[in-house]
Image (cartoon, rainbow, N blue to C red):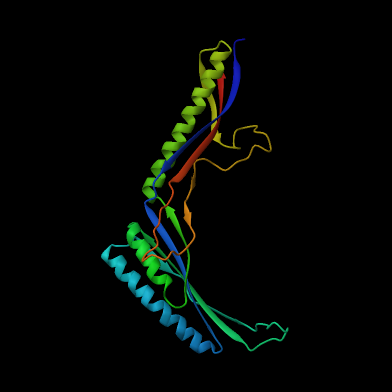
Length: 223
């Protein structure tokens, strides 16, 4: 036995505390007259936008965004199957990114008590810089696992030297089986908190660590 092809998979996982919380809220209004509904949604959304602009200027939030107001109408039905008068609806979605989780908690608690505001949830994430570095580190460790695994396989059959031939994300290795597909590595799983309110003065967020996973397939020549 002089040469053997060894194909392995390498995986690595790390956990890291989130650095930012992205809150998503929806402002809603409805009524029988379109003009008044549009005026109402503007009156509800303006102070929120004004507050977030001030916070961004002060540096207390990372960024925020607001979509255009959506307006539509339909005629609901009552329990007797009768179609009622036309009702107009309006909504606007607002997203705010906080690096201070205490400030985020108080802000969400405050806006949740306002008329027409629905808290859709909070997503926890890393900063782009940390995410990029963490994903690179995880990918590197996944390759090292693949090398160690191939080295162990080679040693088990009496071979001592391995030469890398191919390294790829899952499912991308040359001549991979048709059903061997998988999500490219690394992959980051963001922690989610879906807007459950408690009875305290502020929502107490306890985000779980973000899990970053990486996996590769590698092919080696063992001699």
